[in-house]
Image (cartoon, rainbow, N blue to C red; front, side, top):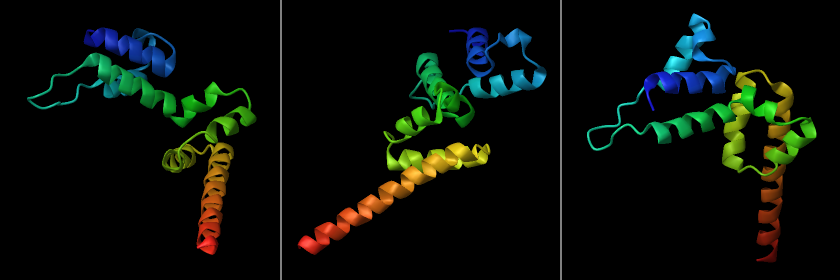
Length: 128
């Protein structure tokens, strides 16, 4: 995949329009995402692997993630399937972009899991 193709594809993912139609600020943002990383002497740049990583990271950005759900209930159901470590990271991301309603849902799920874990530990300790 050429650099120009990568720029075009990334522009479509990030802004849903071709690279040539982006503003200069948007083009700079796309270029920053597409910059080749120094992989060292032993590894060569693999555009497919890098592209998949970039796409996955783009999907998990709060501003893109919330678009995947039609209702807050769908979002909440999805949050309930996440790992605690991932939820804690996502909470910070949602606060950073000021998506406070979503952040509250994530925060409540984290709290619920920590309380349930504490209660489970108390039950185990009381049995012993």
